[in-house]
Image 1: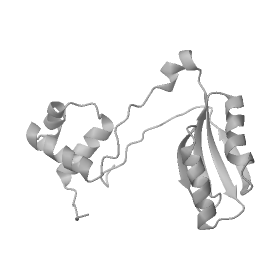
Image 2 (image 1 turned 90 degrees about the vertical axis):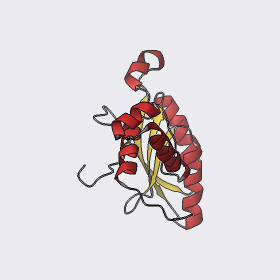
Image 3 (image 1 turned 60 degrees about the horizontal axis):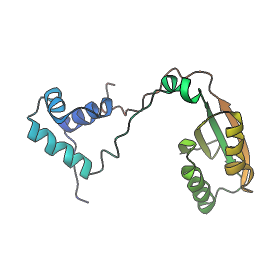
Image 4 (image 1 turned 90 degrees about the horizontal axis):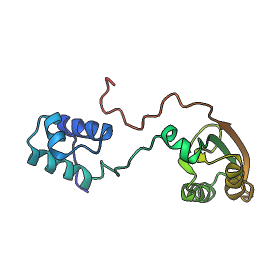
Length: 163
């Protein structure tokens, strides 16, 4: 892949899109102070270069709660018995394939993995632990922390040093 530099306009477009990816090209161009054709061309290039991985809708869990229940969010630390590359890769593959796992981080020092999981209730969490942790002979330690309140969730990346 050829070298590609992001300029201030690219960073502005990325910042605007990560705040609201549903903006029309016209609205995005206006906010970025670009012509619509230039804006469209730049965003297309950013997608092709992989700077925009995907666009998703962030759902409001509290608005959905009357229909689905509030659910259970847990931060789970996982320690493995063996930390060889194959063992780490095998656990990671199983964790990322699990729909209940929203985020999976390989960390150091301390536990080998930190997972953010979202389950419908405690029995659902127990089923998850049976699938991912109890059945894996290489899982040595599991420590779960249950969220009582989310004070902030904002998935955007800071794109300038002043943010």
